[in-house]
Length: 259
Image (cartoon, rainbow, N blue to C red; front, side, top):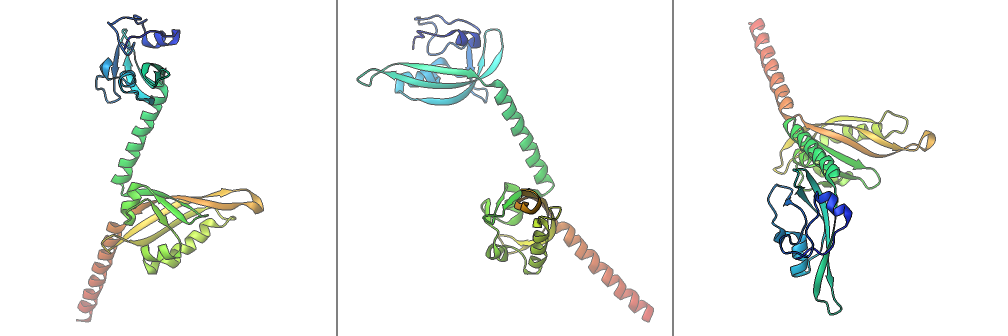
């Protein structure tokens, strides 16, 4: 586990020059290493130690590194064991670089995605994308729940639509799809329909989106539709109840007037 050689960049990243060929500092020259979730990683538990003991390789393993001056950064580590002619492990090489900027961007995107997912759940919405060449719709987790699906991929052909969508709504849906896919149109898709749930019940959904076109002029053609769907069941039920109450009120008023 002795460190026998380091280059200038390694000492710059570590913020110090480790002692070579010594026993005080083994396996790694970092002052302190933590996993991405903040757990301390002792030198004997690093990828370098695993390579020396068991011949294990690692590619792009990320960890927090803390320097003596308190600076913290994210390292991406790749380790390869070195073997002699007979296959015995005689050492290992550790190549690492600073990926803090990329890590922070990725973490920011993950937080934004989590916020977006929570907003979609709260608003009872989901997103999906329909590619025309293969008639395939790919739904996110929220949309799968709305449409009563058990997997993200759904074949949006005549047979698949017939099994999932209410028969009274299919003509309207196909007409709206045809209108949105018109190369001379605005590519806007909007429709309300009922979809069958896993328990056999029906859920009202509102779907709207935009068509992605390729080419221009006479060669302009649709290739996909990206859209979102929202649960309208409560609103539709409220509308039905309101109509029922208005009809009942009208009926009683007519009876009163007739009397």
